[in-house]
Image 1 (spheres, rainbow, N blue to C red):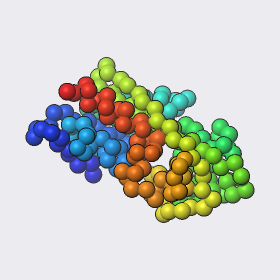
Image 2: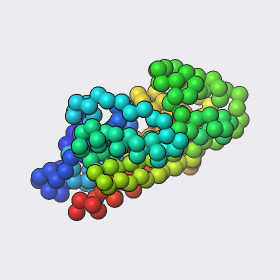
Image 3: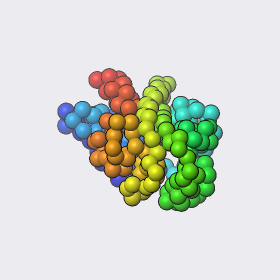
Length: 213
């Protein structure tokens, strides 16, 4: 559940929808947007507002998908909406992943563990293990629309180093540049400083804070 956040003032100034059904992403985005330096708002989830609709990702880019999702859920709820679209590019797999990351291989119907097992099997004999995560974070509030991009380069570990975290299986095998640990071995605070999603949502957070002063 996404908890309300009251920053600097005692009354809530606005409500913002974090439009994802991915529990792992929901936790990370909430952590990035609230806190002492966060947005003065009440953050709500799709579950909390009773929105069960799905958005079909058919865009050719992360930006297109993120903006499409934000527009869609804003139209359904009337609540200013933040959402992301992200994926990975792996040197050894050329253009196989990218915007299709979670739909690739055994597909979205597979469990996180099944998807990651398939991915690691494909990578088993590969020596080119360089990879780059990209995130597009979108904010839509009426006619106001913004998209922010974050990127993090790194490598794919040779084995699954940490138990799979729900919704973000690649976090157990992606080691960001300059780090000895994979994403999932980092604390949320550490990961958000380094991650593609953290970089994108830092820009989004600063933008929204300026708009609601």
